[in-house]
Image (tube, rainbow, N blue to C red):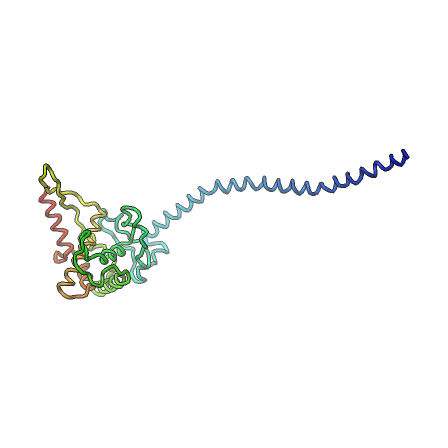
Length: 273
């Protein structure tokens, strides 16, 4: 019996040893997975570290693309406003170059994305700003001035008005109407104006320089309001009068309401110095 027991003991131990030997491939597989994870971690760190370099490269590309747009060498420079006119025009006044936006686009509509932050309206295209002024020509400040007819805030009507206006300018001058608009804004934007200053209950006029953003605002306001006055008094379509006023302002003609208003404002400022 002792010999049988002695012989049975090794037989009972052998299966356990086999089981241990058979489990080794699983252990190796788990170890291989752990090694693969550890091998992937440095790559992930490298990818995270590479992000600033990618951003820097993208920023460089954006800057070069912006320079190409200004110089007219970019593919975006082929984009024409309304599919007709090129936005790469010359801004002669250095004080207004940052405040007259001529970014290439098909339709000048920003969907109000520049209204959330103060002073961001200069980022909107100059033609869009003209269209927005057409929609409020019946107001002076916050007060209602007169009925403006079809130009009462409908974007499609303003869109068609600008299209007809630019077509008339192109037929008359054989030039880019966006360039004529920029010249008109430059020639009708005042550099100085008068503000009242009160001392001891007595108001005194004081001459001050006009901020460049306000210069553009005043110019667009006078161009649109003067066109409305002439359209109502002469019973002419608004787009025809607006085209004539833009041409007159671009040629610095004193018969234009906006140019006359600018000269009068600057004359008062000189007298109040």
